[in-house]
Amino acid sequence: MLQERVNQLKSAILEIDDKKVHVWGFLREDMLLLHLDKGLKCWSSQGLYEYQDLEFHNCKNNALFIIKKEGKEISRHQYKSVYKDTVKMKNEHGKTTSLTFTIRKSSYSAHYHFNSEKDSILFENKEKLDQYLLDKYSYRWES
Image 1 (spheres, one colour):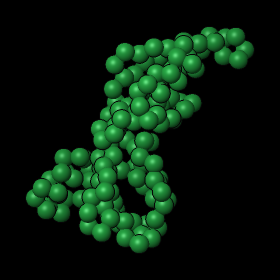
Image 2: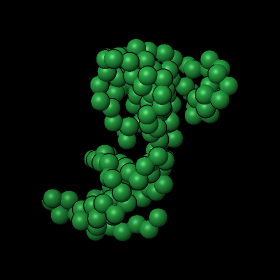
Image 3: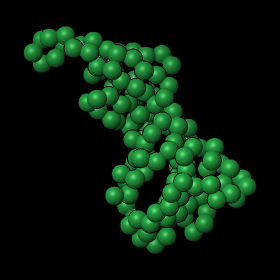
Image 4: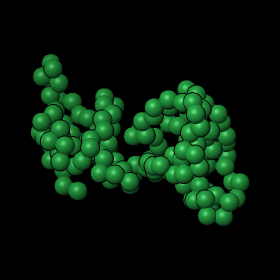
């Protein structure tokens, strides 16, 4: 339930407290930053959820997530789109098909996210993504 909510939000602060997660959702990243800078209560939603491990690479483009524990920030997550293309290939029946994909880069780590209608895969760095694209689609992209 928490993962689904995080995937819907445009930005949020998640405060982990024991086995619960307090979530303050914001309509935009700048509203979250305004809240942090000036203390304004400009969130658009609040919720309390059971704790679960979360994945942030399927969140909306540009959504900023700040994770806190005991009042201290422990991590930030944000993915921004850096590349989009369509590749033509043969399917298992020998017919030419196309696949549109997007590549997103983490703003706070070396991670890259490959997303298509078939796959959503997180890579720990650009080299691993490059190798995947070459092996699976014979495709090279230059960032």
